[in-house]
Length: 301
Image (cartoon, rainbow, N blue to C red; front, side):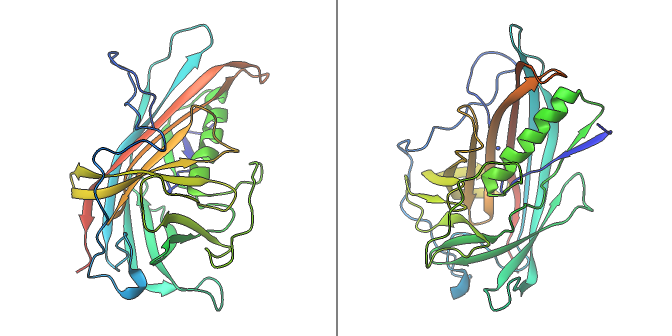
C-alpha cells in the first residue's frame, strides 16, 4: 500500500498476552471479566461542579482537555517458526470538550461536543457527541464509525495490509461501530434505554461484575473492578472495563479500558489476526497490541 496506511482507532477505544522474561515479552494483560478486585473502593464521587444534566462519572464541562499517549505494536507469528520482531509506533491524541451543544436528531436530545485530535495528525479532527445522566454515559453513533487513525510509515507486505484491515474492524467494533462486512447480532434497544443512535459507554452505577450491551446485541461491557491509577495527569479512581464483541473477537482478542473523571484514562488492547499468503492460505498470525494512558487532564475553568 502507499507510504501511509491508516487503521481505525475505536474509542472507543485495544492489549498484550502475558509472558515473562524475554526482552520482547508483551505487557501482562489484566485479569479477565468477573475477577475479584482486592483493591476495590466504594463508589465513584460525583463532581459537584457538574450540572444536574451531567451527573455521572465523566467530566463533560466545556473546555475540559485530556491527552492520552502510548504506543501500538505488531509482529508476525509464522507457523513453524519463531516470532518476528515487534514493530512499534507511538500513538496518542487530545480530546477537548467544545462550547455549545448539538442536536443531530430533530426533537431529540442535546449532546456535548468533543473533538479528538491525533498527536501525529492535528488536521484530522474527529467529532464525538456525548450525553450523560444518572443512568449512564451515551455516545451518539451512526452505523459506520468515524475512523480513529494510526499511521504506518514504509511499504508493508500485502499480508500485513490485510491483517491491518481486520484489526481496524476489531478496534472499531469494541467501540460499537458496525461495518458492512462485519457479522452482527444487533437487536433493538429496550424501551427507556439508549436511543437508536446511541452507544452505552458506561452504565451507572459502576459496580464490579456489572455488565451491559454497548450497542444492543453487538458488544458487551463488563466492569472488572474499581481501582486507583497513578498517572502523569494525577491520581484517579477508575473503573476497569472489559469489552467483548462475540461476532468479531477471537478467543485471544480482548479490549480493556479504564474510565474516570477525565473520561478514558487508560487502554490496553490485544488482537491476533490471520497471516495469509497471496493465495489466501494461512501461514501464521499477526499479533497486535495497543496501550495508552492519560498524561494531561485540564479541568474547565
